[in-house]
Amino acid sequence: MTQEKYDVVIVGAGLAGFAAADEAVDNNLQTLLVEKGKTTGGTGNYVEGVFAADSELQKKDNAVLNKEDLLKEELTYSHYKADGKMWQKYIDNAGKNVSWLEDHGAVIGMVANLGSGARTWHLFKGKGHDAIHNGLEPYAKNKGITILTLTRVTDLKQNADSTYDVTLTNVVEKTTQVVTAKNVVLATGGYLNDQKLLESTPHQNPDNIIPVNSGKNTGDGLRLAWKLGAKKYFTGMAMMFGGQLKDKTVPSFKLWGTAIWSSVCDQPQMWVNELGERFVDESAAVVNWANEGNSMNRQDRVFCIFSQKILDDFTDKSYPRSMKPFVPEDRYPTLRDDIAKAEKEGRQYLHKAATLEELAQEIATPNLVAYVKHYNEMAANGEDTDFHKPAKYLLPVDGKGPFYAIELGVGAYTTGDGLRVNINNEVLDTKGRPIAGLYAIGGDGSAVLYGDTYGVNVPGTHAGYCIFSGRNAIKAIAAKE
Image (cartoon, rainbow, N blue to C red):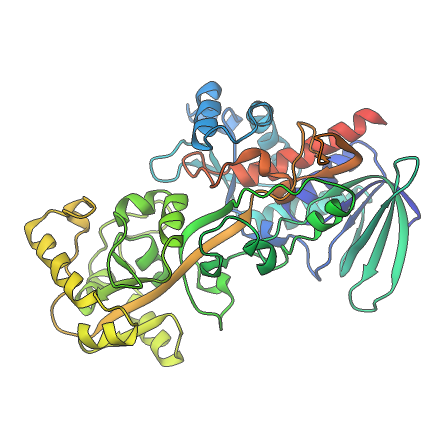
């Protein structure tokens, strides 16, 4: 039964929301956690792991990193748009947050890096799904927290005493209830699933961005805060992880991680734009999600072009860029069958033709045939004179047909702007002053971390920030009580 008054109402039951909830019950705060969906976890269900520089696991593996160097790396990567004070606080507490996660039921399997990046990524066993549903959520429930699903916070009204009247609307029955909260914590995950908000940011080509998340991140928390006078803080940051199979008839998360996806997005094959011309050294791009996504997002359309020989080699022999330890072997045993199935199902992203001329005509790329000829000549000479891709990745698109084109958009996990917060995750107004009792965490309050893109060279930072910011906000609230 929902009571009338709470110390804290948390809006959104994802990774950040549950971190805040667990910290709140540990501090004996009367807490209500509200989730608009039928199920909890949100995009946090798909998270691989969290950042830390000096965790106990890193200490055991002799993988402790210099915190000052990490701070400089993040500030430099963001061109100093990131908040140095917040980053310093986050880095200093990240190792403790990993231990806190383990104390609250999450299981960390290993520490890893991504490409040539720092070894900061603490990978969950069972991804974020298990960390939440086998750890953080049951912990909160055992402590007696109230969780409402299928419920939206549709209005926040600040009272004269700085408490909030919080309007709760059941999304099925359309009934409403108003509760009073001393503090409200916004954890709705940003706005990646709201096309209108996305279009209002400085993205070059928002139509090409394909959300790979829960589908529920529609800017709810941002709108609630803006109505209370919060600053609109758009940097245009979306955490783009590079190519994603472009097919509007299939939920994007079902295409991510498949053999087809990995073969054209993890492997530095030949990528061309709407003219049929390459636009980047594909091998440099795939090492860094952000670089891959940024380079693709500058194009109107993107295709991966390959031959039957490449398809057969990737299936039966090997592919050139090793993906270990994330996959067991350096080939895609199911790839040929997967392509055949996609063709049979009429998948929108797949184009196939007997000749390159026919393929170019089908995907409307006027310079494709000429460029493939040029590309094959570079492959034969072992030198990419256009973008200097290493010779081992110059796989000629030749031989007998058929030939293939896989159309790609730019996959993204979350946004990283929208609201401005201070070092305690309090939401700031247009004059840079905190709005009393209002906090934003996770994707709603992550503008402090970024410039225009995500720093993959220090992996796990966004998910780790969900844990840090959730705890950080509640600690600030508890200090007031």
